[in-house]
Image (cartoon, one colour):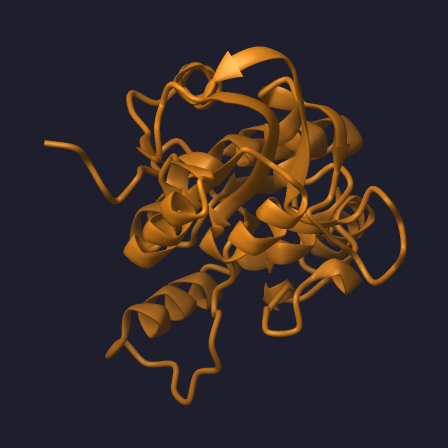
Length: 263
């Protein structure tokens, strides 16, 4: 039977923790490496719903893209949502591992997955990693490989992410040749995308002022929603862990949902 440490080692090979941003909280955040990890669930975020599923399905380990806790906590009590979640996890001996920005920047991480899924070619990081490895770093950009408009890229993005709608800042009919990607909250990648001479930035979320700035600089900004821009990779991660550790039962959370809905 694999241990939490065994699964953590596989994850560290896929997404070395040295790639994480300095402000991030990554790695094994709850539990002990010696604990058993016969049943592993991946998810985007640790929430009451995903914790309940983990308990009901007798999971030993949750691999969550987003960290819990993310910020330092002064107390662990039922008075806060984070406290309640941590207490439930510890009571049920469920460990939590988060790769977060290490997985974002990994050579086979979330941004790379989306770049490949959208058919980009000559893919490279928007912000290269300090390691100097040309395949590691934050965000991605590449050539689209065929004549497309922003509207057509939006349709391709919706199809790959299996979502009904996206939002676009800028003229949807303009042609594009080079596309930037920053999964999750990626409005801050606008300058890097422009420096890389991209025509559009695909991201999960951006502020109103990011959209205005993109429009003023004639840069397309395609917004998918934070959940949609990252959730797909947790499905792939479950398959990857299954391939690497056939002695563990791994699944992607079936209860996880986007907290936002269009009405």
